[in-house]
Amino acid sequence: MQFKNKRVVITGASSGIGWSLLNKLRGIEGIQLVATDVQLLPETYEDVTFIRADISDLDGIENVFAQACFKFKEIDIFFANAGFAYYESIGLPDYKRLDKIFKVNTIAPLYILQKMMEMKNDNLTVITASAMAKLGIPGYAFYGATKAALDRFADAFWFENNPKSKLSLVYPVATRTNFFKQANKEDTPVTPWPSQTSEEVADAIIAGVMSDKRQIFPSMLFRVGRFPQWLFEAICKPYQRYYAKYLK
Image 1 (cartoon, rainbow, N blue to C red):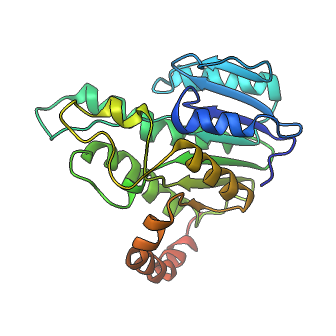
Image 2: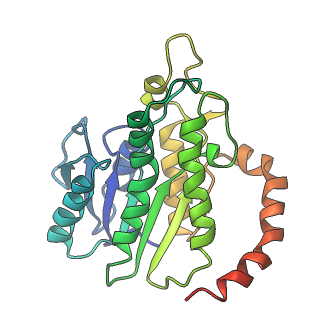
C-alpha cells in the first residue's frame, strides 16, 4: 500500500518507533496524520492532528476513532504501535499489573483491528509486535506473552477472508529508546541484544507496508536466525488451510 493521499493514525506517537514513524511520514504528498498518545508530542506540527488518549481504556480507543473519523470519515492505515514492557521475575500475584500490560499490548490492537474491519474502504492495520513474540526472553515473560498472543492471532487471521481489511505485524528486536529504560531496573541490562534504532525500525515498517508485507522483520539477523522456526510454520500451512475451508 502506498502512503500518498492516505489517512493515517499512529498510536504511541510521542516517542520511540511511533515518533520516528510520524516524522518519516510527514511531508508525503496528500497524507493526513493523526497521532495519539497518553503523553504530549515532543513537538507540535501544524500538519499533524494530536489526540491525547489512553488506549488501555475502551473509551480512549473509541475517542480516537470518533475524532479521526470525524476528521477523515474513513481511516486508510492504522498503526497500532503503543505498548510497554516490564522487566522482572514472576513474583506475587498482581492482577492489575497483568490487566494493564495485556490491555495495552494485546487487547487494544486487536480491538482496533476489529474497528478497522467496520470501515467501508480498503484499509490496513499495522500492529507492532516484537521479536519476543517468536522467542521468549527471561525477564520479559509477561511482555513476550502479550506479543505472542498477537502473533498467534495473526497466524489464524491471515487464513480468513477479509478482502477489505488487511493486517501486518512488525517484529522489531530491541529498540535503543526509553522503552527498555522504563521497563528495566537500574541493575539490569538496559537493552537486550541485538538492538536497532527506532529510525531503522520505522524505515523497515514503511518499506514493508509499501511492499504489502504481512510480516515485517526490521532485523535481518533475527529473520535469518529463525529459519528453522519459519520452516516449521511453512510445513503447518496445509493443516491451517484445511480448517480455514470450514470457517463461515
